[in-house]
Amino acid sequence: MGDPVSVFHEGERSLHKKLDIEERQHELGLRMVRDHMPDQHREFFAQIETVHIGAVDSKGHPWAITRTGAPGFMASPDNKTLAISSEPLSGEPADLNLAIGAKTSIVGIEFETQRRNRLNTTINATTNGTLSFHVDQSYGNCPKYIQIRNKTPNGPSTPQAPVTSATLTAADQKQIAQADTLLIASRAADLGDDPRDGVDINHRGGMPGFVTVLDDKTIQFPDYKGNSFYNTYGNILTDNRVGLQFVDFETGTLLNIKGTAELVEDLNDGVLPLMGRGLRITVQTATRSEGALPIRYSFGAFSDRNPEIAP
Image (cartoon, rainbow, N blue to C red; front, top):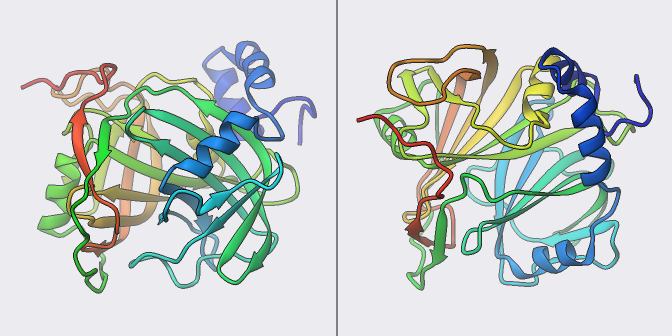
């Protein structure tokens, strides 16, 4: 598996080396990435009401899903374990691998405060609707590009049956073009016992329009500056399958995209700033689930780190 000390797998390290940041990222990873949750992260997950999970289906394709519950639906009995008691939302794949031994990834975001914490995990128990996740890697993320949102008292509408198509519908394209947030799940080629190899879920954000719809089978978005771990990109270099989820926080509509990703060095289109490197996604299926999210959020403010979109 290469350097046994590094917290990154071969795909991530190859990109670090290409960008001449290998030594810096090696040292940063050793400082930031733990094999357990600190107490503040355990308390964080216990108080939020929405969590995003990356998992693979029966064919190994990664998906980004959302689970919700009242504060306390996630609990940490010890610093190596996070238990989540929740039900699948409309549109979640029926063949998602959430069995014991499955590699998974978790990102919790508190939109009111822009706090974000990440876990790479392996399921070690399933009991009466509760999934227990063993922590393989744990680290915090900065608040960059997270829009401020506040939970609203508005009651949820009745979820509609999910609709899956092979292309992006007009409604899908409109939702994507207006989105300021997305979740992306990816996977390493190897889903073995090494804690560095597994599934990843990541948040991406920007001003509305930061995701470009090229046609009904293709979208793209830029690589805004972050921690340069390149977890998503490193995975894609080893396995290009991805799952995206776009959340309409006001209507509760979830749009899940199953597709493949291409790392493009120059996405410049004359509209988006800082395009440069980014991802181009080819859509295989799009599943639209109206009213699926039982929690609603009202918009507060854009992140002050969002690059502006040219008029």
